[in-house]
Image (cartoon, rainbow, N blue to C red; front, side):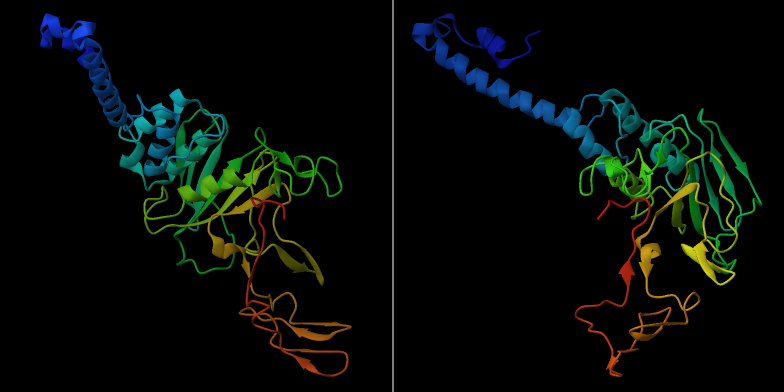
Length: 322
């Protein structure tokens, strides 16, 4: 069967019109233009199907289906994941923790354990081989928040085979070379801020992969494979211990906020109700920075709202170095 207008032309035109001297070359050129338009039309239709789409079209399909492409994922593997969005699971189970865990595991290439746990102790785990399990009543007390705030979800990822601890400050390998150079994010070596942004995107928006009504809290990366055990003080980075301010969370893990509000800081009256320095007395306030301070000459200074804001955004372990 003829597959192009150029091939059909030999059946559509009389023999004398196919001769180059009788306009055959012109007819061939016109048929060639029509074939080019038909090829573009066909390719445009095919790009909506992952099995036929090119690299750029796969990226658009993935954006539409909220499936980020893995860090080292091939076109063929990514296309298979995009097809699976329809069946057997994919969009049909969007809004479950298991579906979210699958997407995170696929993004980082699989082969590691991760689980989701909520305020009520419901734990959903995906093993390194992809098998899934569920447990209830697992101890998990992140903070002293009311038990009624049960719809909060934490994701714990065993990163012992994926990531390393960042180099110490001053190390020549810091951030993969130098401040400002593309490389590692603040808290983890082997991951970039773009990696964590992809995970955050899975947990936010109207078509997120988290269950409806559930609020994503933190992604916790265990660098040594040990499971974190919060003791009701992990809502803040630090705590008072014997009059000293010490880290509140396990140092063997790294913490990436799944929603921006967790990185906002507006003072902490529990840690420093008042601090006296050469500049005078500062008063902490949970809702804002100190309203006034006493300068060395006795004058009161109330800040400048055009310069200082009521809150600041702290970096987390998934941020880029400043």
